[in-house]
Image (tube, rainbow, N blue to C red; front, side, top):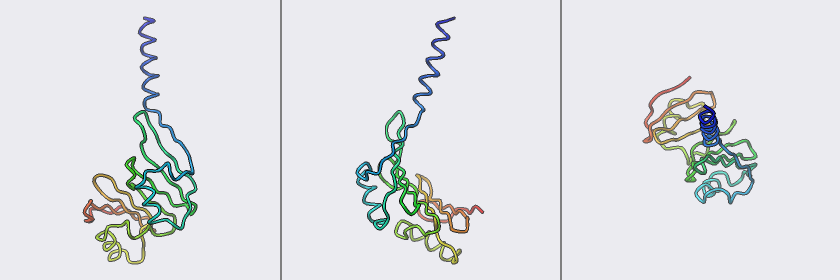
Amino acid sequence: MRKYLFLLVGIFFFAGISHADNKVFTTDVNALPQVSRQFLTAHFNDVKISHISIEKNWYGIKDYDVILTDGTEVEFFKSGEWKEVSRKNTPVPPAIVLSPIAEYVKTNFSDNYIVAIEKDGRKYEVKLNNGIELDFDLGGRFRRIDY
């Protein structure tokens, strides 16, 4: 019985450790992959980095979160490609928005602008400054709206 109790405790301990996330904070831009550094230079060259959060798990680096001094948050996949850009009351850089998405927003929400954009393997999710969220497929075709 005692053997089973120790085995059970050991399993729970190992499972807890294997799912624990670690975050490393730095201000060293060289901790980012080259692709991420190029993205930040191209689109946010005039804004300084406040800090970088490197999220790690049992299998290695999960992703990178970069906070800029103006409050902009940029999240990168572990490969270095951008995953999400979120700004407070400032539009995201137009160069990162696919032209069909930009055209849709300009046509249907002419008084608004994009303050956040997120991409994953299936879609783009765009948030406007009025709080409306729009979903697009990877080709930039409109899919749905969230109010």
